[in-house]
Length: 258
Ligand SMILES: Nc1ncnc2c1ncn2[C@@H]1O[C@H](COP(=O)(O)OP(=O)(O)OP(=O)(O)O)[C@@H](O)[C@H]1O
Ligand SMILES: [Mg+2]
Image (cartoon, rainbow, N blue to C red; front, side, top):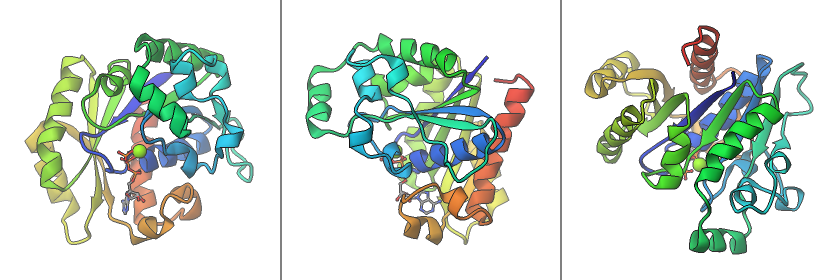
């Protein structure tokens, strides 16, 4: 059975989209067929990381939700051609970046049930091993619905007081939705911090597993979402920390824990 994994955060800008794009690459390197959905309809970003242009992605996840496109038309094969991944593949469903579409979606909304229909159908059509969902930050229904349909939830936070309380809200919501696998990713941690100390502090504070602590990376900051970091920088501490997440996913999938 394919596994659906959501990446969420209470506040914006915690690093979700970059984490997902990099994890998708690492999983595809291991031969997995990976789907990615950009559910951030208000400020789409995943297409940028894959250098997809709007003119080449006429039909999007937004259009599927608004009943304007069939699900099989809104996923694009973004597997890097220069890489010999064998069976590994990445399929991205971008959100619509046209301002007209964004505004009319905000104004008119969509049927929330379409999210579940889309997820179930596309995993079968594309024969996916894993589906990664880039959620909209915060607690709106359009963010919580994909989480409710997930086998696993990663909550991404930074060491910022403003993230602390919100993160515990998201953990509680995940628990109330009955998601068994909830795990934290701490991103953008400055070098002065003691990683293992922080990990145990956070684990105790939230009573929640910490899968990986991603260091602040000046290289990532300079890279500025121009592509997939792990492909460009295969040997940095940040890449190693991303690898920890993909390994945890593979391990849990193999042991049928998700
Ligand atoms: N470990 C890191 N070190 C340095 N910069 C980082 C790190 N992780 C992410 N960033 C930077 O933080 C910014 C936000 O990242 P990203 O867009 O992935 O966050 P997001 O959670 O998807 O945001 P949003 O909630 O707006 O969708 C980007 O400029 C990215 O390059
Ligand atoms: Mg994002």
